[in-house]
Length: 402
Image (tube, rainbow, N blue to C red; front, side, top):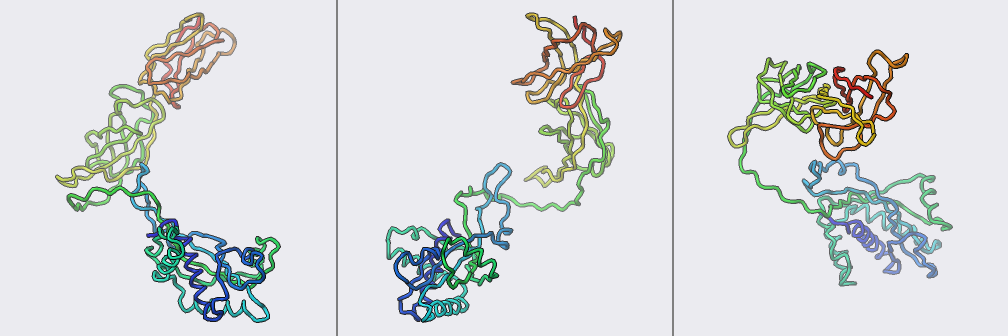
């Protein structure tokens, strides 16, 4: 487990490791600083030492796939989130070239890291203790980097001359100095959100049953005219032999007595709306007295059309505005797309039959009656169709426009 201070603590620990590597050779005269190479000298003559620059952070390929889904469908946490990253450091060596100081520091660093390529928990703890000793209010006091599950390993990261040139091009007007690159892997960052504990398991039960996933191959009829007793027949595989319900979007209806394992009959649930509808068979298993029926398998989705029924269509002129009022079943929902279609009945007023389409206004709630303003429609008799979410009623109602 490690918090958001893990990156800073890893950089500070690497800095301390490098300082310990070069101290025997330079007796404390060379310093390791966590700065960019172009800021190392900082106008103070020609100091010698090593700049430690974190120039890139990448996702860790191995650990990023270890995390299971951390959230439930409602967005609540199942387990603590964790980001896994690798740190890429540029180590640049400064010193007197005539005394081979950069090369001597490089040799000390490569030898030390090769001998102990791991940032140990003891090394991390000593770095944090030293930082707190220098400044009791240091933020390092809140770091728990030493408790993360895996240890950080340092690996040389070779670059071609072209890649190294591109990297150094970001340091504007800074001459190249002897440099090496190391990758620190892996740093694990835990999320800050707390996980609510789940209640304990009260009882355990094991049920052995064959896997029988239901499959829908067809729905009969494909076009269903709405009625309070409307039903559909579902054909497929593994539909019967266990308790099953049919899911119609957000609504459910219990399957009737199975005709066979390949056919079940189901009544449309109360509250279903007209339109292009979906059906899905959900089977259950009995897990015993303690658990009862539990939903086990879901079928693929079947599609059918539920036609609305126009009970009446009347033409009026309230306030002089030509209006067609349609009484319909089932009720129309506030978010459904509704339009009135008018097609002239013979005999036609002109040589060609007239046809019109009028979309409905927005609704704030479900309605069983809906008004359409039909301005510009010539006087005649028209077939009335109501189009709701792609479903239309049968052509059996007409209205007289006068």
